[in-house]
Image (cartoon, rainbow, N blue to C red):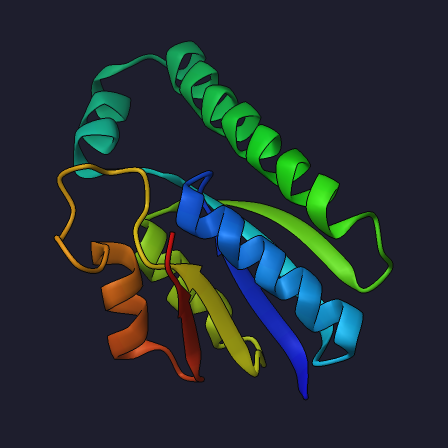
Length: 145
């Protein structure tokens, strides 16, 4: 049994399959507590744009990312439900790095989709999931689309 599970979601088919798997884990008691994490990606280009953009535009971009994340978390909530033992979190930054940082907060398992929404990512496994597999401080379960 896993006391604390971190489920990273991004709206992809693989992430949706991961949500369904975690739902089964909750239903069977295999997972006790789950944090569903969406990371709004701040890629280098966006950070450079932030440096050039005024505060108002910066806040608008952050709000757009937050709204996109909220839609993805709402879809996860439809599958997992509003249970007391499920937390929904939006964070910002490099997706792999943020998932790895969260994994250090006492999680027993990280669940990620094998491929995200980026069509230019690695062929067999996404770059985010690949990095999480390599550097996570706990076991990682990768779910295929």
